[in-house]
Image (cartoon, rainbow, N blue to C red; front, side):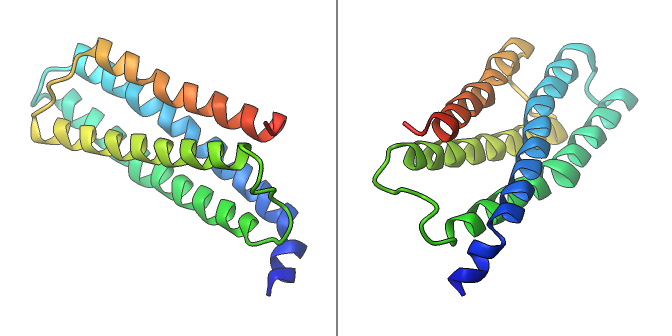
Length: 149
């Protein structure tokens, strides 16, 4: 069985990269939508409903499937024997950052529910600051994987 994962390793890696790109596109865009939503839109207006629809579709239609695919293909690569040196620091750093990115994703999903409930209490500035979280995590992940500390 492990041989199958080794044979398909490059395919899993390519699918993992595509999934990560899709996930990151959404994870960068959703907080930006929140900035515009909180700064430019009156609660209860047609535009409010439109923003809620855009945010829901981005989260459910792109971000959630991309996150799940990222995890599935990433874990599939881990099943290939001998491909990861677990005595090195980098796979642990990457794993920690991916868990943090997933937690950030869930935080964004919660903020979307706040908008739906009319209970958002955060400012555009706060969403702008939070938009830097995935950037920092992405940089750490990329350097950990490429440099292999």
